[in-house]
Image 1 (tube, one colour):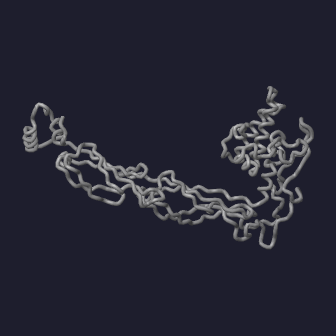
Image 2 (cartoon, one colour):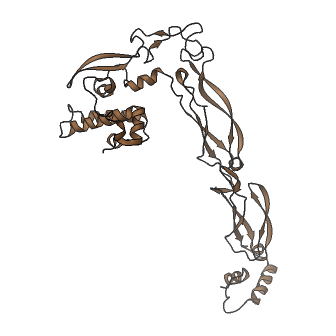
Image 3 (tube, helix red, strand yellow):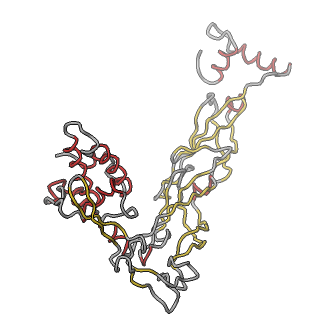
Length: 374
């Protein structure tokens, strides 16, 4: 069986607006009055069938779960004598009455609507991302008007039935088309599909029932977050219209860079420069970590570009702050560009002790000093 999503050329997570745009584009392309190519009419019907199934949330849910077999014939081309459930097809060609005209859309428009989700971008410091923090933010979002309690009308008044549509939220008109005469159903432009008109709107919210406010929120940033981490704060998006539930707030994290430390997942990286004598003889040096300054032991004979590990000094694993990564330290060995006469004599004396046929250069000397034969 054909895949309805492939027919419309959309992904399986496409929203209602994306579905409608795809459908309208294809319907115009393959309408029999426009496209005279063989098979255009069949393609046109196939497009209508796919959109009819996916436009309704309940039908779409059954299709997603069971495929076309789960529709029980509901997704077939409807009876062309009653266009109530298929008005969007003719809206494409006749531009009728203000836009949204599918019955599913009208029903949702008149009832409570889910509020919109909101996005908030938050920049945090490097160490705050490592160990987490509690942060106070201010977000502008829609809340229910406290004066009218979301009704949109002044206290003591209420909405009245729309006289244009008689409270149905929709109007109908007969339209002559190449297929015959059809009844086109569209949203009432007087009440925007609600079925009621507020004659005396609330002065606080302008009759909308909601108003924008700036709200302070204290959010918990867990240890181990990184750039791109998304935190969900339930119920802190915009409030829904007509008593609908609020959406959610999504906080997108961006972590500032640190001049000394680098991060890759749960591992911290840094570099330290030591003298060639420290590398030869060994030493203990102080380095910077996310936990503060700690002592790092440089073993004698440490080679250039050796990596030394500090266990459990890295980043806590997100969701399991007890488990931490490591801190990897790259050791850079500094060679002097100039030496004193006394230093030269000491080094030449040391070199003479190792002079043999395998050591004939300063590089051979340092390889020997670092514990490796040339």
